[in-house]
Image (tube, rainbow, N blue to C red; front, side, top):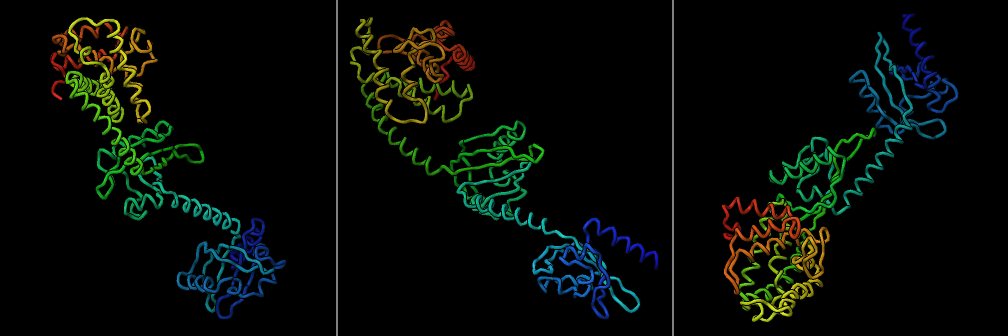
Length: 451
């Protein structure tokens, strides 16, 4: 017994030096403090231990319900570990404490022995962090974009309200899942590849335009940015994504572009009625450029712009007299100059119209050559757009291999020879090589003939 008592006092003395309050409280038959250490008194703002021992334990709790809960736990479970409570201090101030205590029963008496720690600064920090967390969540929830966080396994760990509403689920139903739980496999795979790129390189993906299939079965167009997230040591621990729904804007742009295209189609049909040969030529060139662009791995939007340029590249010939276009003999210098002007006429027609691709400029350059021998501006090398280089080679391929009003078809072999002869000089060598591969793959039959 003496050893136990000495140990208890040793603990009291030790605790005074580390700021932990020790106490022993008689719970039955009559409640009162038996003893406490100086640290216990200091935590509660008292100058002496005696002042504290006059108090009732329950009276130290700011909220009576917290006192009842603590005592109930002591009576039923015989112990309480790190119970947080708000205590009254001497000068009518308050202090947050954590209580760890146990019930000790002797033959005729019941005691509570335990410790308290001042956790006010800890609670203030928690409240600050909680306030910042709530502020951040409120900010995220009021942003009209889908915002989501993923871990290194691409599992979703946090979403904002916009994301949850769009999925038609609660955040709890989303957390822990991946894109494969919400999107078609092929689409989710592309998203996973983007996440993997960000995680492995630490580089962001900014403003990627993509179409997504929603859970309700409708498609929308979005623009997505993904960035890496880091821990305190600077290690990548996941990704953050922001996806904005651009469907309404995309539809508006589509409608606007459709109106422009309807107007251009009228001109194309007029050219078809006036000059069927030129119309047939442009359709063939459009098919050729599409095959080449796909072989080069271009995306759908870029291919669309290139194909449109091919379909319209000879639209300016509508201003050239038919007797010149279909003249069987050699053209005079003036006549040839008039035909060359079709490039300028087409450029003037399109340059004032806004397109999401360099349509007018591509057409304007499709008769330029790498060595500067082309027209109208004798551009050289890298000054010529990649789209214009493809269109130039495709224009020659179709024109040489097909029948014209003023001559018979020279054939695919002759067209291929012409391109190979000028490869690296007049025409882009890489593009000519792609054309040669396409021709050989199709057994020297026009690869665009069946489109």
